[in-house]
Amino acid sequence: MAQVREQWATRAGFVLAAAGSAVGLGNIWRYPYVAYENGGGAFLIPYFFALLTAGVPILLLEYSMGHRYRGSGPLSYRRMSQKWEWLGWWQAMLAFLISTYYIVILAWAFSYTYFSIGTQWGENTEGFFNHQYLGVTDTFWNFGGLQWKVVLPLAILWGFIYLVMRRGAHGGIERLNRILIPVLIVMIILITIRGLTLEGAVDGLNVLLTPDFSALADYQVWIAAYGQVFFSLSIGFATMMTYASYLPKNSDLSNSGLIAALGNSGFEFMVALGIFGALGYLAAQSGTGVNEVVAGGIGLAFVVFPEIINQFPGLNSLFGFLFFGSLVFSGLTSIVSLLEPGIAAIRDKFDISRKFAVNAVIGGSALVSLLYATKGGINYLDLIDHFVNTYGLLIGAVAMTLFVGWFANRLNTLQNHINQVSDVRIGGWWVASLKVITPVALAAMLAANIITDYQ
Ligand code: PHE
Image (cartoon, rainbow, N blue to C red):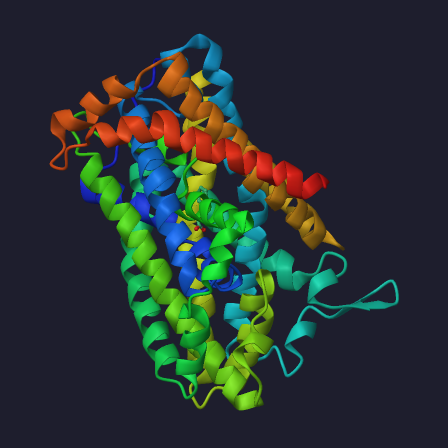
């Protein structure tokens, strides 16, 4: 390769970028309702199980592969075996696919941030995107045509992201994270404190935390836990491999990995407390139970939250601004990490300039993203999300553990590689877990997913 590999300026820069990738929409809108739907307080058990048997081991696997073989996904796999380069492309493609719809959710959040000033979304929060299209009025769930409330923020965000990505890993991604993460931490602390001090907050917390142990007998709850851990930690998409390939030679990997993983989970729990506190408040105001006001998925952030903000006891614009602004900030530091695996992959392969690679990847993702902004686009979004986060991800992760653990048999090499420099030494548990427990657990989930989808 003729090019000199890009590098982070400092280890702190890398840790921030890795944490910025992990902390995203997955933590703020996804975790709270996934935990709620899957056993409440009892969900913590499969969650920690998934974190220990797959999350942390695979995170360290990606770090060590990217760092040892100094490459994006395809290049790292190729340096282990010519035959497995495809797996790197597969994982980078999944990241690219996520970027195409992740940006749309980000665009909604951006739009809502603006409209939170003076709660301009009005009383009927489900009708925010209401819009006459071919004589039919659409709701949030089925909004029509290309409308400026989505397309304008989409264009602004793409423009901004393009400028960041053009400046490279250090000048662009690292800088972005250095600025946004501290601001984000303050925003989230404020939201959590406010959420927890609202009237009725305790009822919300009870619903989030009361364990329903019978949920543990349901395999779908375990699938949900693994799914959440992969998405939230950004693993299985060649993202962490790519980021680790920009670290200087003698870098501590295990310590950084643990900081990123703990930080991500801590953040996730904290936000969930604040959000359920606020849901408890809404329930108290409307005289119903918390269970009646929780909505799954996108609806929690974009339909229920505006309603809560409408009923806020004061400073509602500020709270709305903080909530949607934190979605935008956390999402920005994640989307750059969804685009970088593809950019790095084609640069490593074709030895082209960063500018060219950024144009190609961002141009492609921007075009596809327009699709979800059109009529019924939310359905495509759902479809791609389901495909990527169940089949695509699991096929890639099973193949990855089988390849590295058995076919190429590199786990001991990688363990030594980590232990050469790291303060926190990685023991035999890591190898054992990746060789046996992780692939078995992931293959079981893949099988369970197929059965659920086709029965
Ligand atoms: N972890 C990010 C989030 O929680 C999403 C993401 C997934 C980012 C995969 C990069 C790779 O929102």
